[in-house]
Length: 177
Image (cartoon, rainbow, N blue to C red; front, side, top):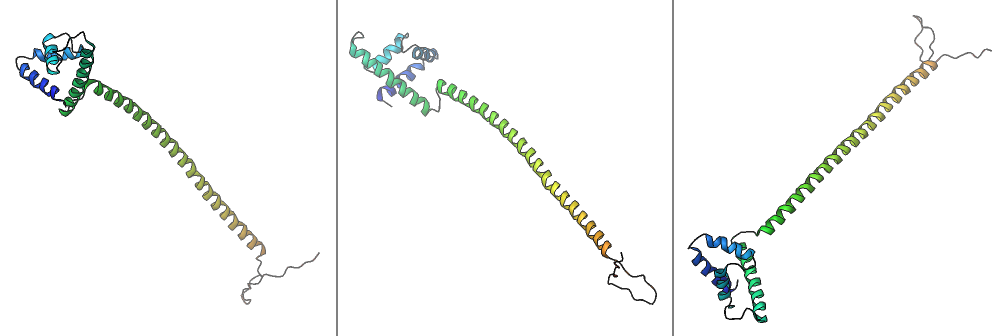
């Protein structure tokens, strides 16, 4: 921070002890481009060495603009040091926050939609293995029935009597025509 800025604030705070009205005047003075309040303008000119120059000269205008620029930069630095955020910056951040909040809500809705689609797809894919399992069970059952039928067809035994042992060989078929 520049020396004149600190000197200005030192003088200003000393003088502001006289009343709150000066603080209100200070705010209005800055909003009006450092014009409108003669006592503050005179204090500013004195602090920044502009009181000895003619206001109609080109040099005065250049020095005035530089003084205002330096003052505003130092004022922002001072407020930052105190933890104060300029109103415009605050409003800009609030606007950005609201935009991001809307974006997050939109993305959450999209994620919700994708999750529903994914759940549906998983359910649909879950029925495919069940269908294969049912098909395998059915084919296994039909194959067993076929095997048993073929076994029954080729299985013929001789009539059983008390004296004859059970034959495990299939009986010969006659091929009479």
